Image (tube, rainbow, N blue to C red):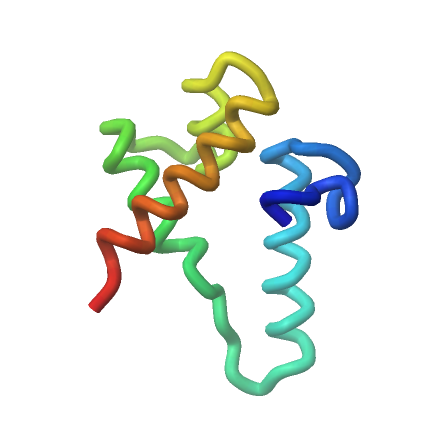
Length: 90
């Protein structure tokens, strides 16, 4: 999705990506006995900590707030996701 967002969500938009991921999780949880929220709750906590915020705003809203444009927010998400994964590998 990072390289070809148009194929999946139409254009590089963090809010469209968030909606896609939320839909994926909802579908997974509907068709599988064991529910899974993947990395989203932990990523939310990571973003709040990274930006030193306690808020009810989503990770997408926080990243977008600190970005200059939708494209910059979309790119920042992938950098932050890479950082999150590298810092949370066990």
